[in-house]
Length: 112
Length: 112
Image 1: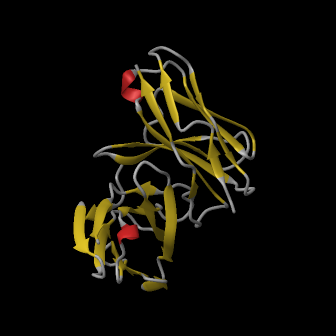
Image 2 (image 1 turned 60 degrees about the vertical axis):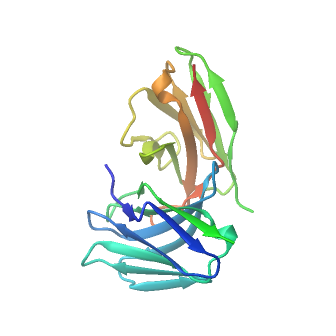
């Protein structure tokens, strides 16, 4: 079952621009997480936002969460060529759930 | 630096073979997970374990089994490999519920 769905599927921007990716999910959650994957490699955890938080920052990353709309967004400011990767949101299924369900990802290309 | 190590980066096996994919973590994490990743389908959970000798089915357990005899090691077993199990297999671990995952680099399995 696909809990999270990212939008857009692909995004191409110039270096220095901001990149925004969106994620929607279906059921109540305890937390939502964002991951990055460079081509052919494992995923790297970027940031976790809990259901009682609305916004969180980490370096050039800003994540928002709207539980009433069951949606989240990831903003990468002042993008760099090295940010080129696929980005995934992942959510749990509320209290007592161990596992995360991942979306299909947004493929970000940052052009130098 | 914390690590999840998957024993092989690339693997080629024949149809009908029994295949073992090994995953070891050095972080004393309680939870371990096996996902497969396919183009257009994203990451799908095969099995997970929240304690030694405990296992739970994920979304697509058919054709797979797992073993967790020690806390640090979680093995994925393809009982009789088939071509539709050709995929990227990703192992992950987390300390407990509500924390981010640490992923291994992945094993790209081709069944011929």
